[in-house]
Image (cartoon, rainbow, N blue to C red):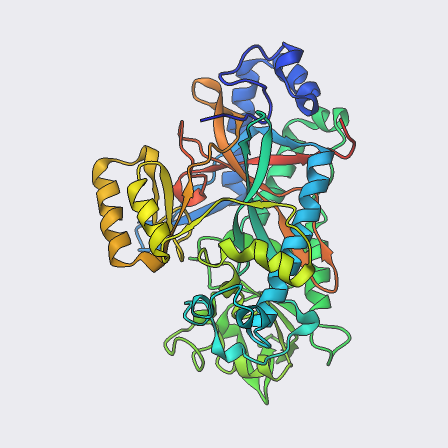
Length: 487
């Protein structure tokens, strides 16, 4: 399997002082790195961990309980070596992200309105209407700007091509409640704190204005009934795995962080309880899944949402970001159809590639998958966080056999993909500098226009050889630098 490293032209690494072994956009950084005392770098790692722990930048692992039965809080490991992306690569990626998110929003609107793509036979009707994320309550509902995914996190990986260069692929579209942007911002603050001299030697595009762009996007998505919209962030509460991020973004935007119990509806309007009495709410940036938003419409026992919220939403008196029912477009069984969506709605060829995908609901794809389980990555279509998947080359015979039985029992619940050798990036581990696999999640904001900061969250698989970068599976993060000038 061909390997591609973001910084070096060959793996295993040669000498960092050899200019020929370092890619052009990393050369200034490599020269700096070669001059660093390992003891100093170790102390900087310890300082970063101390600051992150003091600030409370943690992630709750649901399968690992604390003494009170809540998800145990873990520090997400932070790596000192940035992932650097050239200005040319970012320009291509940005165009591809705008194209993809535009098409996905068009698709969701179409699903709940004219269903033209279903009638054209490009996406199977049963794949949509039997999808667990399809919400019949949204049929015919008009949303501001016809935007459903206001905040999209598109997971991108890079793998070597036949020429030995790196090709970018979209691995997954996260359109419901994508998380991780707070770590993008905190990682940048940490790098600027630890190594300010590096930023004077590189023209790194800023990301600190993300909360301003997010607030602008949310305000642009408000109902037409108000000129000065009140925005809130709705969180499931402090035991949610991403609670730090919910509180962080509310604070950075200067808006209220609320839970379901803080909201109520009256006459199809939503209000927030305050010490000065009720205050009308116009835009809810919700970090609560559809099923828990309104006990009258979805799960009757939910206390995380607000009774009557969906009726107020249908009446056009409040905006939900992201919209209800958006998950129908980020299901892994829908992912293979995104290139066709781009051509259908935009009349364009996709700029960013999909990973080749076998849909196990198809008999011929299932047969191929079953015959090559030891070579493929098999994923549950509703799986997330690195759970419910098989990485064939790294799996035991028992794990492969268990997945074989699961596939035979419910083939429509799985897709399969080739095992890409994700690009690696130098990472500080206990033994020193070593390659570790990474992915990249840029955040796309869609209101009246599409905006994004030049950057995103780079996740790193800290276990040697692992391709699973998720925080819930022990992955870490890196700062991502987009260079402002071509190399």
